[in-house]
Amino acid sequence: MAGMSSDTLWLALGLVLVLEGLMPFASPAAWRRMFQQVLQLEDGQIRFFGLCALLVGLGLLLWLS
Image (cartoon, rainbow, N blue to C red; front, side, top):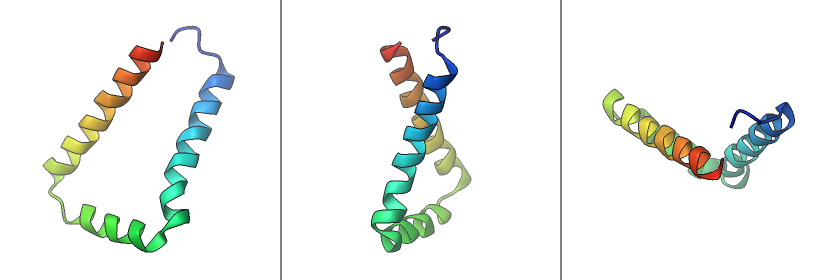
């Protein structure tokens, strides 16, 4: 990953923003319900999901690089 250009980083960020914007654009009511459910989770549960997302993301980066 040391050879990643700044263009690649900006493309990756753009892709993340597109993916993050799909749900609120396509179904704002479902997106709002999902966030209401997330707000009811305990801090430890949210941390667990965050850790899982980090590990999957790091795994993908290592696998693809």
